Image 1 (cartoon, one colour):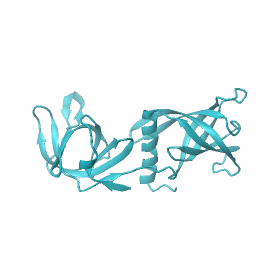
Image 2 (cartoon, rainbow, N blue to C red):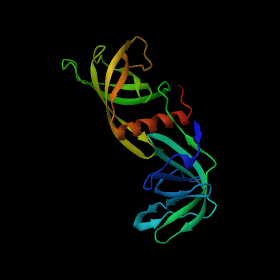
Image 3 (spheres, rainbow, N blue to C red):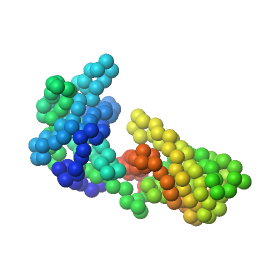
Image 4 (cartoon, rainbow, N blue to C red):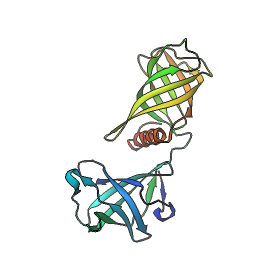
Length: 222
């Protein structure tokens, strides 16, 4: 991952930011970016729990802050400097020395096993089948299936569930078959393809990129 200076990232107030207590239970709590005093502090709303209760924090507690900026996954560590309750619950966090920026390059691919259903949109004689994305980037993937799904140049629709932390997102991707492959990674595969993504909605793009970045962070092979 590359690093960046938070003051140069031009973050807009209202940006969603997930806060995780370092050394805690791993849960990510939703907060909102309010603003910053460059070189001094970052202001975020205190995550709220049930019955309008603020997340219990203490001064000098270390938090891991994660957010998306310009379709790029970012993260930094900071400490709670001040806890404020009026006019709303919010936090002053210490200024981070650096922000980790998990840019996914076009050539960066990670091994995965993302279960999907596949429909050929170019030729209706091909029946819906099932398979898995075996390795992927945010621009393309290696797709394996239990039955053949089409020919080179056919447009296909891929649907599947992406799990990111505690969130499950159903994504749909329009892609084009660019190559037929003769090597299989999965035991029940009978066909394999190199595909290029043609249309991914903004929200599905973010979910896919978060999944890719999560796999990279876990040390998945490329």
